[in-house]
Image (cartoon, rainbow, N blue to C red; front, side, top):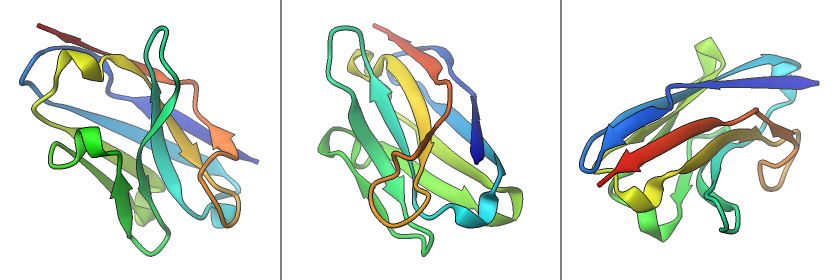
Length: 118
């Protein structure tokens, strides 16, 4: 089993920045890709960013150029640096991991709230 613990959420004004962190513990060696999902009230959950074990990254179009996902394997931690935040970025952000090939949806953190005020 893998446990994921997010931190770094909070309230920020539009145009501001936040960095989310996700510490992984447990069966770390089984983790392949990792990612960040978000879900806003009344909206469908969406994959925001993904990073593979090799370091390749992908982003949803709405955050390209503003968000950066990174991974520190030595610390078993993945980060999401968010800049130029918009009110539409307000959501609960979840750290996720894949236990094998495929989308990182096998393991989920409890989520951290990000609120962007206008």
